[in-house]
Image 1 (cartoon, helix red, strand yellow):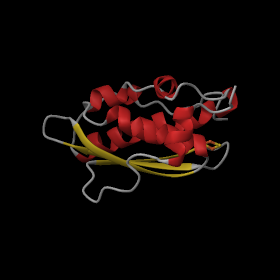
Image 2: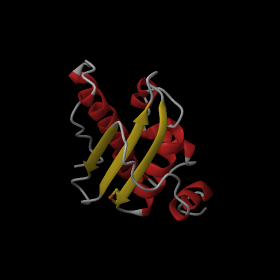
Image 3: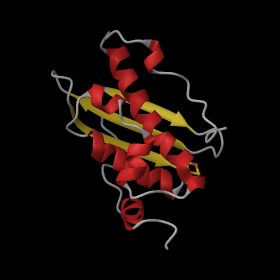
Length: 142
Ligand code: FES
Protein backbone atom coordinates (compact mmCIF):
# COMPACT_ATOMS: atom_id res chain seq x y z
CA UNK A 1 0.00 0.00 0.00
CA UNK A 2 1.24 3.49 -0.81
CA UNK A 3 2.46 5.55 2.13
CA UNK A 4 0.19 8.43 1.17
CA UNK A 5 -3.39 8.25 -0.09
CA UNK A 6 -4.38 9.64 -3.49
CA UNK A 7 -6.20 12.45 -1.70
CA UNK A 8 -3.12 13.43 0.29
CA UNK A 9 -1.05 13.48 -2.90
CA UNK A 10 -3.74 15.49 -4.70
CA UNK A 11 -3.99 18.13 -1.96
CA UNK A 12 -0.21 18.26 -1.66
CA UNK A 13 0.37 18.71 -5.38
CA UNK A 14 -2.72 20.86 -6.06
CA UNK A 15 -3.43 22.60 -2.76
CA UNK A 16 -6.75 24.47 -2.61
CA UNK A 17 -7.11 28.01 -1.29
CA UNK A 18 -3.42 28.91 -1.15
CA UNK A 19 -2.57 32.55 -0.53
CA UNK A 20 -3.69 35.32 1.77
CA UNK A 21 -6.84 37.37 2.25
CA UNK A 22 -6.17 41.10 2.45
CA UNK A 23 -9.57 41.67 4.06
CA UNK A 24 -9.45 38.71 6.43
CA UNK A 25 -11.70 38.79 9.49
CA UNK A 26 -9.28 36.60 11.39
CA UNK A 27 -5.72 35.39 10.91
CA UNK A 28 -4.17 32.49 12.78
CA UNK A 29 -0.51 31.62 12.77
CA UNK A 30 0.78 28.53 14.47
CA UNK A 31 4.07 26.70 14.51
CA UNK A 32 5.08 23.18 15.31
CA UNK A 33 7.86 23.19 17.87
CA UNK A 34 8.85 19.69 16.84
CA UNK A 35 9.70 20.41 13.22
CA UNK A 36 9.67 24.22 12.99
CA UNK A 37 6.96 24.27 10.33
CA UNK A 38 4.63 27.28 10.26
CA UNK A 39 1.05 27.63 9.05
CA UNK A 40 -0.96 30.81 8.55
CA UNK A 41 -4.73 30.67 8.08
CA UNK A 42 -6.97 33.53 6.91
CA UNK A 43 -10.76 33.49 7.28
CA UNK A 44 -13.36 35.90 5.98
CA UNK A 45 -16.54 35.86 8.09
CA UNK A 46 -19.85 37.46 7.11
CA UNK A 47 -22.39 39.15 9.41
CA UNK A 48 -24.05 35.80 10.09
CA UNK A 49 -20.85 34.22 11.35
CA UNK A 50 -20.36 32.16 8.20
CA UNK A 51 -16.89 31.64 6.79
CA UNK A 52 -17.31 32.82 3.22
CA UNK A 53 -13.68 32.49 2.22
CA UNK A 54 -10.42 31.21 3.62
CA UNK A 55 -6.86 30.87 2.46
CA UNK A 56 -3.66 29.52 3.90
CA UNK A 57 0.09 29.61 3.61
CA UNK A 58 2.09 26.73 4.94
CA UNK A 59 5.84 26.77 5.24
CA UNK A 60 6.19 23.12 5.95
CA UNK A 61 6.03 19.53 4.88
CA UNK A 62 3.74 17.92 2.32
CA UNK A 63 1.41 16.55 4.96
CA UNK A 64 1.06 20.00 6.50
CA UNK A 65 0.21 21.43 3.07
CA UNK A 66 -2.32 18.66 2.33
CA UNK A 67 -4.00 18.95 5.73
CA UNK A 68 -4.25 22.73 5.61
CA UNK A 69 -5.67 22.51 2.08
CA UNK A 70 -8.30 20.00 3.21
CA UNK A 71 -9.05 22.06 6.35
CA UNK A 72 -9.89 25.11 4.22
CA UNK A 73 -12.21 22.97 2.10
CA UNK A 74 -13.94 21.66 5.22
CA UNK A 75 -14.57 25.03 6.89
CA UNK A 76 -15.53 27.12 3.87
CA UNK A 77 -19.27 27.85 4.00
CA UNK A 78 -19.47 26.70 7.63
CA UNK A 79 -20.10 28.77 10.75
CA UNK A 80 -17.17 29.77 12.95
CA UNK A 81 -18.57 27.47 15.65
CA UNK A 82 -18.48 24.54 13.24
CA UNK A 83 -14.93 25.46 12.26
CA UNK A 84 -13.95 25.40 15.93
CA UNK A 85 -15.20 21.83 16.12
CA UNK A 86 -13.00 20.71 13.24
CA UNK A 87 -10.65 18.12 14.65
CA UNK A 88 -7.38 17.02 13.16
CA UNK A 89 -8.85 13.50 13.06
CA UNK A 90 -11.66 14.76 10.80
CA UNK A 91 -9.11 16.33 8.47
CA UNK A 92 -7.07 13.11 8.40
CA UNK A 93 -10.19 11.04 7.69
CA UNK A 94 -11.19 13.38 4.87
CA UNK A 95 -7.75 12.72 3.37
CA UNK A 96 -8.19 8.94 3.71
CA UNK A 97 -5.53 8.79 6.39
CA UNK A 98 -1.96 9.81 7.10
CA UNK A 99 1.00 7.73 8.27
CA UNK A 100 1.18 7.70 12.08
CA UNK A 101 4.39 9.73 12.18
CA UNK A 102 2.71 12.52 10.19
CA UNK A 103 -0.37 12.90 12.39
CA UNK A 104 1.28 15.84 14.19
CA UNK A 105 1.17 17.76 10.89
CA UNK A 106 -2.64 17.60 10.92
CA UNK A 107 -2.67 19.06 14.44
CA UNK A 108 -1.10 22.15 12.93
CA UNK A 109 -4.09 22.54 10.56
CA UNK A 110 -6.61 22.23 13.39
CA UNK A 111 -4.69 24.76 15.47
CA UNK A 112 -4.39 27.25 12.60
CA UNK A 113 -8.18 27.21 12.12
CA UNK A 114 -8.75 27.69 15.84
CA UNK A 115 -6.22 30.53 16.00
CA UNK A 116 -7.94 32.29 13.10
CA UNK A 117 -11.34 32.00 14.82
CA UNK A 118 -9.85 33.30 18.07
CA UNK A 119 -8.38 36.28 16.21
CA UNK A 120 -11.80 36.92 14.64
CA UNK A 121 -13.42 36.83 18.12
CA UNK A 122 -10.76 39.15 19.54
CA UNK A 123 -11.03 41.66 16.70
CA UNK A 124 -14.82 41.80 16.97
CA UNK A 125 -15.09 41.88 20.74
CA UNK A 126 -16.93 38.55 20.78
CA UNK A 127 -16.74 36.88 24.16
CA UNK A 128 -15.58 33.30 24.40
CA UNK A 129 -14.47 30.80 26.95
CA UNK A 130 -10.64 30.76 27.04
CA UNK A 131 -10.90 27.06 27.83
CA UNK A 132 -12.12 26.58 24.26
CA UNK A 133 -8.64 27.63 23.17
CA UNK A 134 -6.26 25.54 25.24
CA UNK A 135 -2.57 25.67 24.54
CA UNK A 136 -2.04 22.50 22.59
CA UNK A 137 0.52 20.23 24.08
CA UNK A 138 -0.13 16.76 22.77
CA UNK A 139 2.46 14.07 22.49
CA UNK A 140 2.51 14.47 18.69
CA UNK A 141 3.80 18.02 18.97
CA UNK A 142 6.43 17.72 21.64
FE1 FES B 1 6.31 19.68 10.31
FE2 FES B 1 4.76 18.01 9.03
S1 FES B 1 6.85 17.70 9.54
S2 FES B 1 4.19 19.84 10.00
